[in-house]
Amino acid sequence: MGLEYCPRCGKLFSRTVRDICYNCHQELEKQYERVVAYLKEHPGLTLNELAEATEVSAKQITRWVREGRISIAQAPNIVIACEVCGTPIREGTMCDSCRRRLAREVKRVQMPKPAAARKNEDAASRDDTYHITDRLRDR
Ligand SMILES: [Zn+2]
Ligand SMILES: [Zn+2]
Image 1 (cartoon, rainbow, N blue to C red):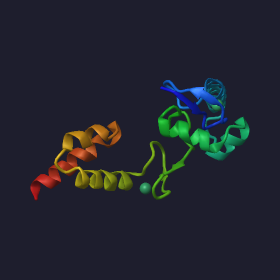
Image 2: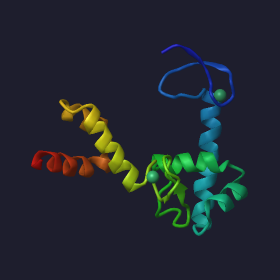
Image 3: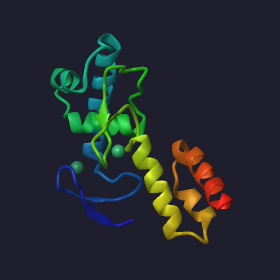
Image 4: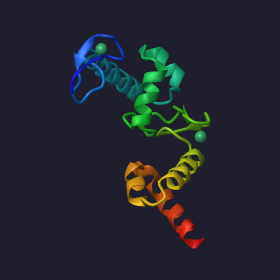
């Protein structure tokens, strides 16, 4: 904990659980509520249509989708891009093939410590990790 510059507005704030200042957090929550309320009425919107209609940046909406705060069920037509290769995905940060490749690379780098590597995986990719472990064992 300590004083940091808010990455959103540039003001100094004391960092606790959030990585942005209180004002920005409040503002974002208001935007979030607006987006979710709008989606409820217009669930068929694409990312750009939604951003335009709510005046919330597509980047911010994308972040909520990645964080799982906006679900596919809520927004069936919103597609986001894999952070690595740009392939359209529906949730999370990476497409399946990038996630698998990354999991393999993590394994190779941290080979003697599979438990630690597994802890760093998010729940969604945990299945892949097990499969890769099995494959390695077969060699
Ligand atoms: Zn701020
Ligand atoms: Zn990808």
